[in-house]
Image (cartoon, rainbow, N blue to C red; front, side, top):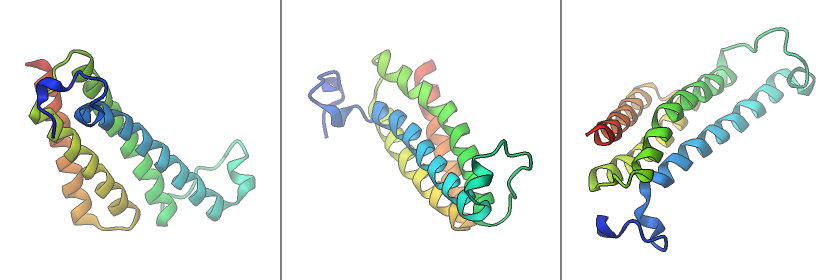
Length: 143
């Protein structure tokens, strides 16, 4: 692992975990969109997803969980990504923000899969860990 003082060397991409995690949170939203869309197509048919969708999609089953997963990932990304980017732009990276970013990504992946596959206890724990990581990065930015 790189020494935190060496992080601003552009050849050391592994040191910019905060930047990687911000991009990752956006990519996870994209994956959730694709899964939710495929779920809607398989449940309601292509004509539904290509329409103006006058009726909302049912929120039960996998399709509903995929929709709720997408919504939660959007909310998490909107809280986390701007702060993580600000940490990088302002050169406020620390060992704590590095590990918070790494753990945030792992927690969001666990959360996403647990939501999709109805693993409720672990899902809630992963959500909490992700929120703690978000707060950790916010506090570091504000201090």
